[in-house]
View 1: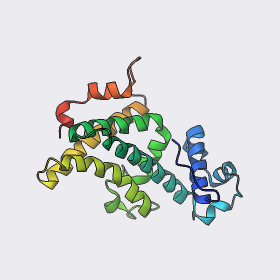
View 2: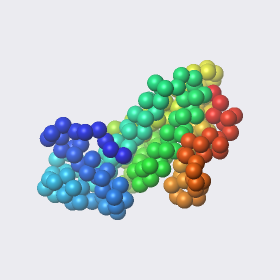
View 3: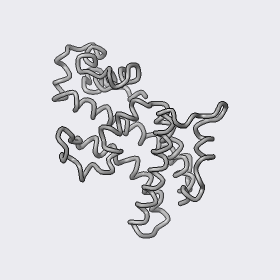
Length: 206
């Protein structure tokens, strides 16, 4: 995944991009402040101008991942009008994102506690686990877009959220199975084709 280009002199964005490059090449084990600074071609102390520690930088990377996923979902709104079509294609886009960016996807979920769904209840409740405001906001956005589509059909808000959560859980589960190697993509089949074949229309019906 490539984050949008940054303006010259934007050290914070440069560090996030450098971290994304290292994550893609070496996985989470490659993310150290010193390595990120070296990739960004700045001094090893430079990251501390914007991040107090590695945790803050990693959460900024996770937030950038959620922002990119959100951008992809919003783009689909321009292509698909019907809620049912949007929900289906949101699911496809989610799984494709995970398959294309497995290490980033795992990082996003590990830092946001399952995409922000329990962030409010658990924020600060575990030692060393505190979600930044930016990450909390970014991690909620994809689910909010999905829930908005279910809400368009009206009905009880609790039921709307429950239906959206069911669809979200199914998509999340499929993504996890694929990137962990438990569900292989058949030869000649795209992620989209597999997703449509595997998903019951009733589950995604809005």
